[in-house]
Length: 463
Length: 168
Image 1: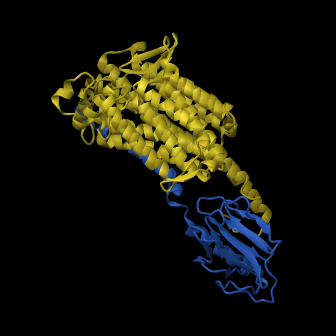
Image 2 (image 1 turned 180 degrees about the vertical axis):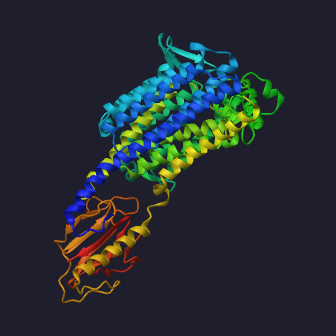
Image 3 (image 1 turned 180 degrees about the horizontal axis):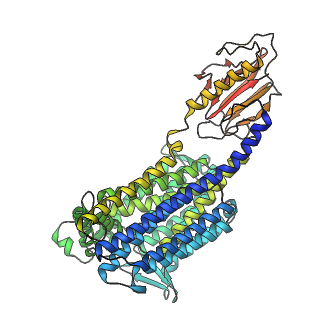
């Protein structure tokens, strides 16, 4: 701040320099934080090796370096195509992703998996693929408003992806849930990608329909209900989500779509009644389903009566949940240390129960650090939504962020026995390619949205 | 590697993990706690003084007291702090609306500005600012205004993180 405000021309020049410098400052901060995150990731891998085997495995560190190179490529691409994008999202996600790889690597060591048998190797390849796809998204999608135009395409894509696992021949059932599609060369969970398509559809549709949704309708029980024709497309999607619950045996996914639908309805119309009605509908539905559908009943019993020996020993009982709780309990406040616990006792410790593994080896302190990272990620996402200049961007940012937040809540809540266990993946941490790809696309979209927000605010401040 | 070294390394790892979290919190502190407005306000006042001394004019740096009615009303608005620092806006009509809305005469987009924040009006030969029930208030010379308040030249008016002064 120079004292020469009277010299108008000079300050204008200063201001221009300032404005050119700000994005660089943001990007430099991002670069520094990415390097920091990659160092922590390398340290985590090194500690896993030291703790579990007593020696360092250089090859894994090399792969981690390769992933760091891809993140840096993404960072450099942003300097050209998204200079004003949020600088904190990428480092946070890099760290979460890396900690997940370290933990998966730790479980590979325990199970004696090496080379391409190892889950960590596959996770790293998927991370690379996911990052490259995110890079493509951020380079190709230059303006998020172009996505709004294809809202019904997104609806179709979402519905088709959701139904895909039910198609005979390509649908595969793994541990009771029919969520997978095997195309011969690659198998993936289409539901993960569908969540992005549906977020795009909900956001795009609600922007155009929200006025009639909140203003037109008949009053009943003191509440104005929207007309059927306004609600039509949303009801279709909701029905499909419920079909997922019934036919694909997946409580988590249907909860995710239903939650996304409710939040966006609430955000776009500003009426809390959606939460009250929707929440109680889902609660009632799940409660009734707990009597009807065996797998839902099993989940409820395992949750409410976990330590009952009969339920503990039952097939699909609470063995996994209780072992996870024991693991976290033995970890205590500061944890057993990376590579020093026994997280491999829990079935599926590298995917569904990765939070329990982390809780055992990094302790309560480590789990809270990770939850803080998620919290910061979500706060950035909501911030992008709040600052958004157009309604579609706002709704989309809130919707995408909420998808991540709800997944974290459902998974961590399930593992810590706050809510019944449901089959959702822990974003960025859990082993699983489809989930990584989907979440990195969400990251790319949020970065694109944040760039537009700041860019517009700078260009359109004064009119 | 001894048990102790490993233990220290593990402890250090948790510490570094938390340092990362706090670095990020520090990086977005302005988002969480708002901008450090005091400093900006002081600079604004200093500047007013500097300009006042330079011009050695009789225009008083008197807190909200209205200027002498004989004087011509201010003709420009100069932003002295905030994102648009250094910008001069000619006050051509007898009214200027300020706020986040794109319809405002002066658009200020930060988190502390309301959609229709305040209105600057020419009244009896002097500018008067009226707060339009904004959330975070309008401050004339660091005092929040609730009623239409005269704005003499060189007195800092702050809205959100932007501070402006009127110039003849």
